[in-house]
Image (cartoon, rainbow, N blue to C red; front, side, top):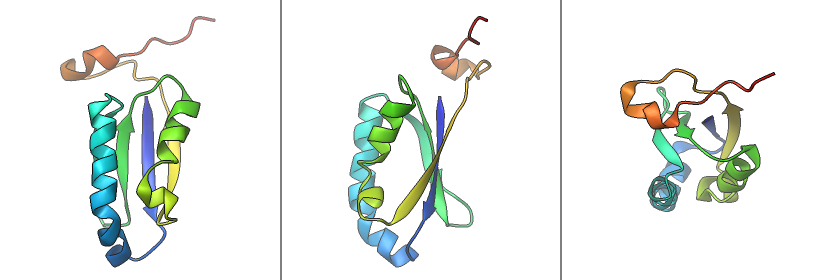
Amino acid sequence: MFILELTYAVPNDQIDALLPEHSAWLRRQYDEGRFLAAGRKVPRTGGVIVAVGEDRAEIEAVVATDPLMVKGATEYRITEFLATTTAPALDGYRQQLPTA
């Protein structure tokens, strides 16, 4: 599982102009089962996305297609983690620790 942290690199009015494209991109990722949750940071300096994928390379490739990223309006920090405990609604995403 991955936490994608977006930090805006341009003023919010420029972000607002790109939001329709970004929202369409988000919908595609939800439709493909890649994103579980997303939203703005408070205060509004970027956003956070909870994502699933086969590996970091896949997630990096997806992030590279975000219109906000393509147009230089945001930077991403990608954190990978093993979701070994989850709420019941996320049981299907629970992961196992690797065996030594």
